[in-house]
Length: 272
Image (cartoon, rainbow, N blue to C red; front, side, top):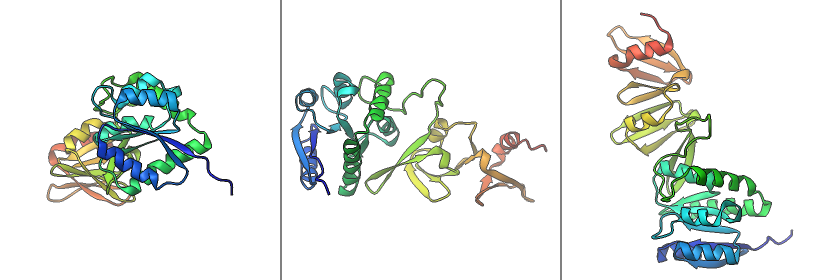
């Protein structure tokens, strides 16, 4: 078997402990050379231009020149494959997911690091970086110059302004759940559960806030604590005691509040 080529890595983070952790993790990988480990954006720009690393672990939020500023100054065509390191919330992460080969949410565990690094390594070895650079350019064209976007990226012309994916943190990992896979959503205090056909995902989000980010043509709030995907409703049940339920094609039965019954009937084309 031919020997794997050496992967040249740049680390950029203003926190010494964060840099040291990445250095330790990369030191355990075979065929890896850390070409530089720097603590600010200016040094990052110089290192990319002079050392030409294959992969950059790039902190998003740094004093002065942010990680996004670094990418802007270098330009997508000259940037190495980028793994963003960030403490941003799940919705801001979606913007970076479009642009980066992966991202790490502080604090991250060894397994999450390994997943991100091996994904980047495969891209380098297969030389499949053109698409990533095109997506990076699209995000930079529409993104915030402050380096701190607080909402999902603006859609391309003719695209949907609503969420298409939701990033869920799970035991130090981040899993991106396509909205198209969500059948219904239930709320409990400051948390909501996203129910798919396979499992439920818990996120910290108020249901009314999430409702505003979902396409109202696809999702409808049928109870103060329940949002349902309308096209999955199979049966509308009217109980003898004045209670209402819907049954989804997957079998789930969900309550419908009286105050929201009329809107549901209108959406389903039900006549009284």
